[in-house]
Image 1 (tube, rainbow, N blue to C red):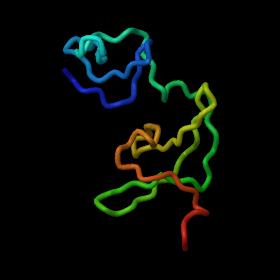
Image 2: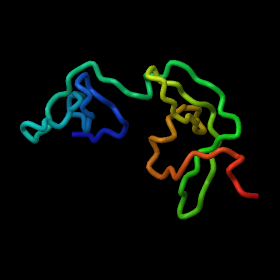
Image 3: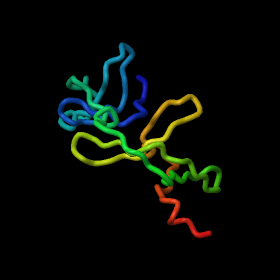
Image 4: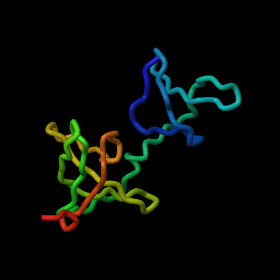
Length: 115
């Protein structure tokens, strides 16, 4: 069994918590208290982004070894339900939702920073 590391939902909106040895997504059955195969299709909230808009002067602030580190956002992802998520990229160019990172402290605009 391999733990799932990204927010991923099945067709019944249950969170995928692991993958079996054959690559089948597993969710918790609250009826039996066991892991059961997920109901497909799977849905990753980050893949439901319908538009991206600029995020000038916005930053994700992370706790890196007790120190705060700011990373500029590359944009805001607009989901199909109208909610937005902050987007950033890593050194390899992979775009990700900033809120998926466990050491995220906050999202802030440059005007909020005291100088």
